Length: 68
Image (cartoon, rainbow, N blue to C red; front, side, top):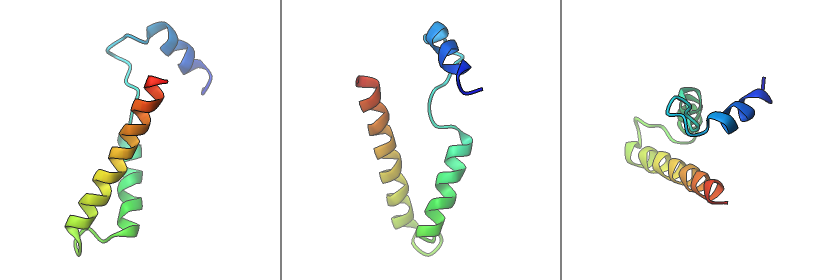
């Protein structure tokens, strides 16, 4: 199942129906990992800062891989 999607994406890469990027499962995993580091109720500003930093670096990685 992991070898077929790259071939489909190569053929239909410009399709608006194919989404490559973070999905709900990854977002839930990131949220649960962040909650282990910082309590969002005790330190909401630090929690948001860590979440924005994590998503910034994920986006930066995607841009760099897209460029190369």
